[in-house]
Amino acid sequence: TFDGLGEFAFYDERKNEDGSNKPHPLNEPRYAGAKILISGANFGCGSSREHAPQSLHKYGFRGIVAESFAEIFFGNSCTLGIPCMKVSRENREKLVAYVEQHPEQEVTLDVVNQEISVGDLKIPAELPKNAREAFINGLWDPIAELLETVDLADQRLAALGYGS
Image (cartoon, rainbow, N blue to C red):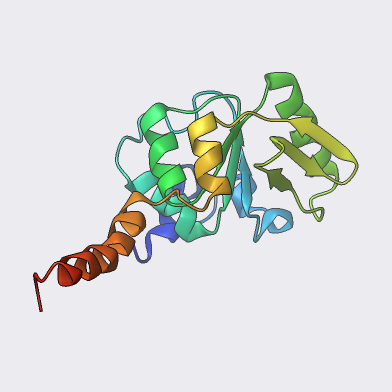
């Protein structure tokens, strides 16, 4: 399982060898409990396994905003229900500046309207059409979709006289 993986999100960046904290935004009390992660370009590069997005999900992140995403990381994140919304560098910098000044403000990712808002700041964001539609329709988890069809398949087979 991926249980307990959350505590290791960005571990080498956040912790010294002895386990003490390094200076890092995730170690700052003002960002404790944050649900939205804001990052730079090519986020998730080098994270082709599911462990990286699982770690972020278990840590508590429910959305990611960045200038761009590594493709495999993006797909694995979306499968976990974590929308990864792309913004321009300029708008990311505006968002970061606002959040640094107002860390208590809730950041909202609007998948339907492809917009990110916090306080009085609203910025456009991009989410590929297929991922956007999957989130809007609640169909981002292909394994859950497959498992939901098992009962339907059993019912159809039973109606045809197969199975128990």
